[in-house]
Length: 339
Ligand code: ISE
Image (cartoon, rainbow, N blue to C red; front, side):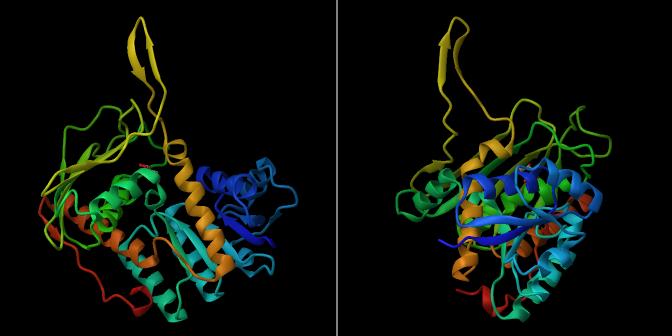
């Protein structure tokens, strides 16, 4: 089968991991070119990638403009996403954009409108949990009659730590945003309102970062979702989810680790970061993107999903500021996102 040429924009941890995944673990695509908002860093990072003959372009426009680039994976720092997305949409290319789509709902809405103006979906957003086997089983069980109508959900999201340049808002826009997307996806509903509460901050968090945070949100149909977000939790990357329905409850399965029994007791491992916890999900999601370039039909989370999650983040940040419950306002949904 002919393979499609793709570009990678942003060569930090996620960009490099995805570039190598496309080169080694997936089929049907090859990385032909890369770029980074910092052109000097792009050269250094490209040399470290095990990708022979990869070209290095000076910016996103040049990367999108190459004839041998049918789609670009954007994994640059959040603030760089909007300009790159708008450029890719202008050039009519396929785009995979890591979450969050953009750091603010206003910017995400500009992307939604630019995509709608092309008349077709071109963007897949990196909410990889939607491709995780455990979350898919959970959703499947929810849609069977067994659990009954959902009433309540609990979502825990605990990280070991975050990079040094992590900003205070990102506990919402980078961490909680996954739970907002999962709530929308699990319950096939939009988020109606949200309230965020602080707790005693961990001494491990940088000054000014409220960590941990909890949120309570209600979907429009009234399901209450309790969210916990921890950035500097130290002990492990621990992701949990449980939904209580009218007939029973269903919980996300833990990843399987072997059980060690010895003189210290019975022990089972636990992951330390998302790349390893969600490796299979990342492979499936990026393979789906690659396949969508060949088929011309975008799949997975859309720009609208990215925008709606970001609108919930905007409300959550306003709630963090005011202490009040905040309504999530959404613009009208363009026709290309109805199906
Ligand atoms: C990180 O940026 C991710 O995208 C991970 O999926 C998430 O679990 C983590 O909390 C974020 O910091």
